[in-house]
Amino acid sequence: MTEPQNTNASEMSAAAQECNSSDAILRRLATRAMGLTGADIERIVREARLKARRGKRAIRYEDIEVGIRGNRPPVPYNLRWRFAFHEAGHAVVHHALDLGPVRGLNIDTGEGGYNLVGFHVWATYTRDWYENMLTMLMAGRAAEQMMLKRVSSGSAGADDSDLARATRLAFDMERTLGFGAEHPLLYRPHRDPGAVFDRDPELAVRVHARLEVAIDRAGTILRRRRSTFNALAKALFEAQAMDQTAVSHILADGDLPP
Image 1 (tube, one colour):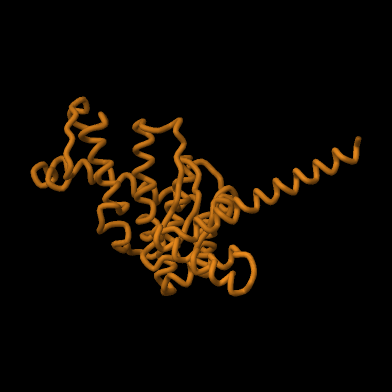
Image 2: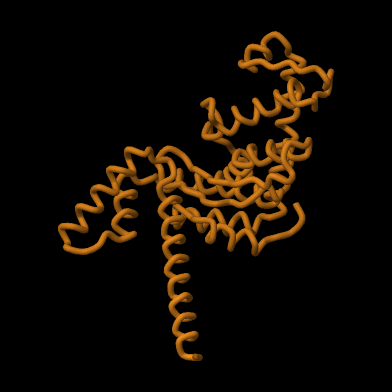
């Protein structure tokens, strides 16, 4: 009776290891593919499958990774460092404020960096949570300022940029979420905050003040966790794409109060 049980246990263990290995590979591929469109990925997989077929073998993880990297132009040295600092800043502050897991970072796009983060649902939608979100959104800019002494437009310039998202969030805190410094019980939505700022300069001052507090707070967190930030930025610069396991290993080593 003992031998069959041991055999079954071994088979189950092997199956579990294979499953975990497959999951890890998929996570690495997903991290590496950040920023690509569905059409890009479909084409890369098709080309990798063709390469494997010509070699009379099964398709491998490396085939797809090489295809992804070949789809992108090399990122200049100085720009890679800026991207690495920026994304490491987001990740360190996100972790320090316990907003949720950092699932992946990527600077291998030629168009800026990407971060994939999750959020704990148990603490969402309070004033503290929104203030933490503002801090995290401004952390990339704070990291550039800390390391390079000047910032780029990488955190701004588009409707989905860090600065645009932070501005809209600070605007909503003042106008629609019940956290405004003036008339917090009034619900006053608007699709274009910029147009409102032009008519209401005092509101613009209050929103800007929230963003100043957020970027100062992000800078303070990064300075306190400088060694962790440096380690993550260096690892990201070298790897260019890091999955949750790789990022979490570095972040956990530097845990201390935010």
